[in-house]
Length: 174
Image (cartoon, rainbow, N blue to C red):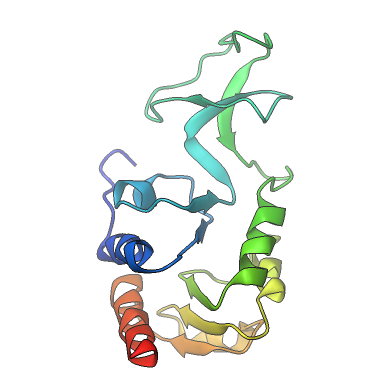
């Protein structure tokens, strides 16, 4: 992850945030959206950028993610072992309700690069505002059989797909 850099799609999303109200919900635990300049990003599965004390998710500490967390490294205020602020298999997705609210309020929803098979994230799409314009971007044409909400499937990679959605959105607003 140290070598990973934001893609053109990350930068396009950040540019959209400067023109419109754009909220990003990501399943990724990296900070590529933030490094591209995005501000309102909800990390559904947590962020490797933070540590939390076990049992106290409301306390977060910034941590360079390339540094290991040592066993015995404790929170100064709770005394609990610190761990990365990420959702592990079997744990609750703490940001699920916030993601639901954002989808209920959205006018446009863009779903990028997901199989739509991972739960509970794929169930979130059942909460899309019924009046929203929905775009699915994925190079896999087979995704069309799994779309949980009516929308346009753009069979392409993230970079060109996001650029295409940006063009379509600007045309509709003109």
